[in-house]
Length: 404
Image (cartoon, rainbow, N blue to C red; front, side):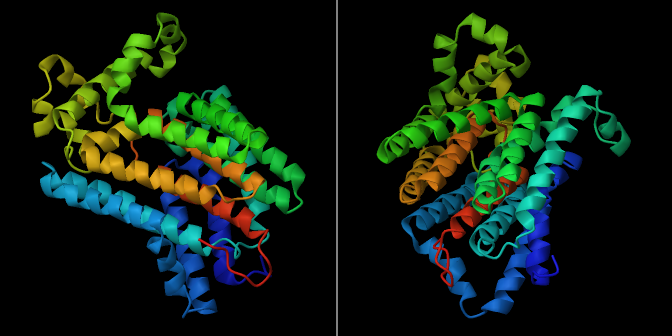
């Protein structure tokens, strides 16, 4: 740490400590990502003040950047017809600052992260996995000690965070000739995920591993096509997910997924899908899921399907986009996802494998998770992408800037 510039050292430490911090306080990742982003912003400002604005603006001028800005613009515009503008602004107030912090971190940190940060992050992952496993096995004594809510699901967010960051961090460690640390990162992240009660985390782990294996063995174009097909179907079929699952999901599957409340999830998806069909063009407005049952859109839903609109979220981030932002929001989200895959397609094989594994993991989680705008989720994605780009930076020629 003494060899790293102080600001970069602080930013690297904040990023590295994120996994264990999430175990101790499962909403802490936005704060750590913000601290890390500010540290790297300050460091880059000292290092190259004239180049900094260009570094931050350049990615937004690409087709992917413009699509993301259009999606954000439509989200903000939809607050104009939100029946609960204060709620919409509160949700945006959590999401947007975290998104900006994550963006700054992703752009500015790779290539400047101190050498100690990746091993520290590996140790944080190991500690996080061990704490999750032991605390659950001993009936949550740590949660009692910390005065937290004593419930097994308190580790769901930390487990989902481990899901996201393990692969990218392991790649960076491997390229840094820390192969044992890379293996430990994957192993103990898997321990934390599989020992938690989060079905979403286990689903994300399996999807990420399956996609990574497919990309590693298949021709490059087939791997990209497979990821594109999965994301495209996730967006396109979200409004009819509930009806599809109600028809094709066997009773035996529901019996196996009792802990995941699969029947309730199917019913919730059917209710929100009915709401999308009632108002497909512009949605109920950004951030309205928490009070969706009180929106004018809900009044158009048959009474028998209306009750479960009051659960607070559709348990599917793709369906959430449809319900809140309508067809334009879904189209812009799909466009951004496809442009993202186009950008990833030029990566070297190992980087592409990890990147598409992360895409599959995050997509699978988003398909069953609660809130696509949650700050902890945005921060976790930002940290994962930062580690992935840091691994990519290890391959660039000395003295050159990593392309956004």
